[in-house]
Length: 369
Ligand code: OSB
Ligand code: MG
Image (cartoon, rainbow, N blue to C red; front, side, top):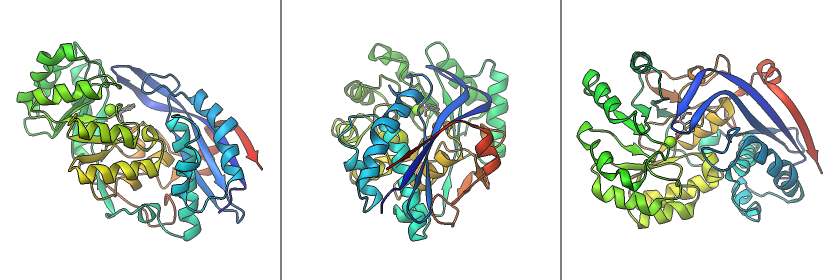
């Protein structure tokens, strides 16, 4: 397969309401889309999940644009790509920059699946036609608003609820939720807001029967997470700490956690995510599909990944309408009774909603051989 041309779009979509975490708040979602064209007129789509500021990982929309335009896309135009799983090796000459890599790698997976006329989830080895999903609820200014969001999620069949926590807005919050929803499958995500100095405080979450505590400590603190997990009954789930197969191997060897949140963007593509899935399966770690407030294209890739065998816990991928008034894809991703059904069309399985796609495009460049 030879890539003839890439189009790199910059998009801007306003979210229904700001999403607030321990590291900051997002409402105007700026992101990139990669379109990969072959010589038969097929087009594959990939979404770049970096945020405008480097608070989740070190990448930003601008660094990804630079990496894609000046390095990655030109490299992939000069190489023959036999299979999408080759892209990981071809881009390994460029250090890190996982979100930029994932944006183009996922576009090439979609293109390949369309060429062979199969749904992407089948091409990557998925084993189920529907995935279980929950929701992730950002920090709320008032508890009443949190209850409203939890009630709405449960009304839609959400299989579990994740709430963001940060120092000063954590234990009391969990206690309040537990009192009102004693049996709710509940988890918390700290986005690296604590350190080992908070060990005694973090132990106090144990009585609340949480499914897991996601990324309590620093992104680079796999060792610290191992020390914390020894002291906690609550399973730790790593998100920010796992950026590659190597990180996954380190975390497994150190018993740093019991669960991984897997995001294609954070680990640099579908192939790296599959390798992490294999490694985790051998070690009996449970997995689930994370989210990055994506629009439809990113969401579709993430839903496809979640069909792999060991993605046994509910994913963060909520439906398109959870964050946006309209989506770039048609039909939109919908959640029915807490499940997303995989589309059966080739590739990501969703079409582009051309009107919305053009409306939200704020910049477009073409890169050809
Ligand atoms: O930590 O999982 C996270 C959103 C942005 C950045 C990081 C995270 C999140 C979420 C929401 O928790 C996931 C989603 O619903 O897309
Ligand atoms: Mg997280």
